[in-house]
Image (cartoon, rainbow, N blue to C red):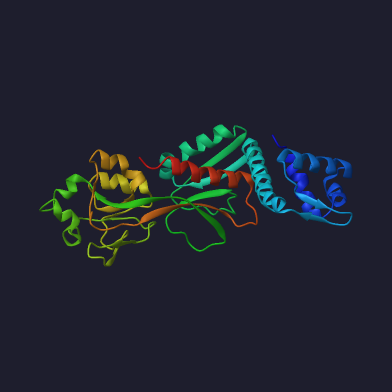
Length: 302
């Protein structure tokens, strides 16, 4: 098998323009460079370089081989870098924050898998319905859902989940028919729940027109500041609301909640990793963000 070291010597000779200059670059003697170049040509059975006392010139075979040689060396280096990166054990403390619901149902299983790869890493997870102020509170990373405000923070999307308008079966039983749950006018006769933390949701009506589903209407019978409370009121039949599907998947599967406005197209809610803007995020943050994106791709909502 042809040695990759000889590939490297050949490339160095071409780039340096002479055996002597290549030897200086590689920290080898000129004789070693010349010997390996000859052995490479013997192994390949072709002449790669035409040599004179003053000049080196690539043959046609040498020009073609150089292209493949560079690709092979770059691929080999990339494989080495990836292997070394994977073996690096993260250490120290990583502080992150998100909402309680997202932590429980989506984030914690992923963090446990990440910890298994980096047992020396300590995690401090803080949960709150309200977004934390990363820099004053010294968080390395925040996981935030939905529309982000303009800020000096860097945001990287991790995953997306559909939003779903829902109500409890007992509440929907007040409507004259099952189809009425898909009619905005008739559905509007039922009480609504308010969730000020979620901006009004743009939806596309069956006729293609744009509309808004108000998440905090003026006539809301209840207003809450957390998704768990919003879900609990919806399950109790207090009103119609919008929730992310990852939070209510089991409720839909077991008919504790039912989708409404099924002919309307609701958007997806993005989930972002947010961290302070810097030229280069720390290895802990960078590797966790990459891991979470890969994990969520392989573990979609049930």
